[in-house]
Image (cartoon, rainbow, N blue to C red; front, top):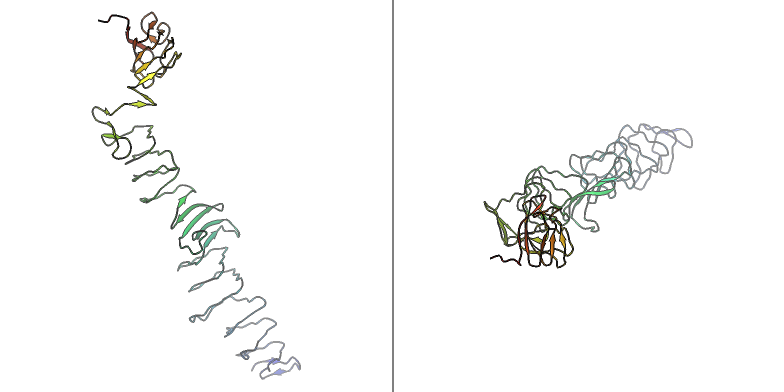
Amino acid sequence: MADYISKYTGAQIDSAVASGSSTTGVINNFNTLSGSSTATISVGGGINTLSHITASGNISASGIIYASKFESAGESGETISFNDDLNITGNITASGDISASGLITAVGGISSSKGLASHDDITLYDKSAGGDILVKLHNQEGFATSDDGIIDVYQNNSVKARIHGNGTSYFNGGQVNFGSNISASGWISGSNIGASGTINGTLGTAAQTNITSVGTLTGLTTSGNVSASGDLYVGGNDIYDGNSGGTKRITLGAINKFEGDISSSGATIYAKNTIANDDATPSVANGTYFETGTNTDTITTFDGGSAGQIINVISKAAITYDVTSTTLKCGTTDLVTAAGDLTSWLFDGTNWTCLGFTDQSDDLS
């Protein structure tokens, strides 16, 4: 029999407590504590039970409810709902889904053997509360209904790497290594792109002015210059200008054939080059045919020569070649020419030796 103590008489009451009545002390050894559908059972102190508390309605508390376990009966549609924050110092274990209309924040970790699902963004932070963002999974910024997935990796709260489902993906945080092939229908851009194997396809240089290779470049098309600090090998026999179908310029073989003029740094070998007036040491780099200025000048040497280079110079005025104390070698007396005279010179790497002098005033018959 339940042990009820009357508030008014202090005597034991061995019958039901009437509606609206109160008791003090301890209520022991009862099986059911119940009321009508509109009744409220209020307890001012603690409730200690060795078994379950079962309610078909709500259980509410203005203070804290302490429990080592919260568990639903497991029937279809049954849930445990919290309208305010839920702070748990231990683990949350669920054989089914855990859902929340707001954020789920965990200072520790979140693990699942079934997978994690979210209908909004997922953000991973540093260990400490309020720490930096590490990784963020979200949709296209500014488009709430977009289904274009984005994975961002952060450094110091700034995006350094991005994988975009329908946009530009990039890696700015360091090196990216791939153990297999890379295939792209668009651009692959970066300050340094290296491969231990072969890079096939078109290499574009929209943002990069140089392509450096320590191996082999196959099928390289460039609108700029191609330079090599080492050897430059051409697998075919012909070199063309422009794209496929351009004009053939060089045919390689036992005897290399050059189509058209050969030029370097703006001076064409077979073109006429004019020496400026009053230039005593004119440059003859990359040329063979020169005409002097129209002033009466003295030339003491030629600059920019290459060993083995032969030049032919036609005087357009009274030009004197100083051959007595310079690198011009042509006997013991300075060579004086008049307009129309021709001199030819051979450079040995140090000196220019006169090969011939044609004096147009002489009878050469």
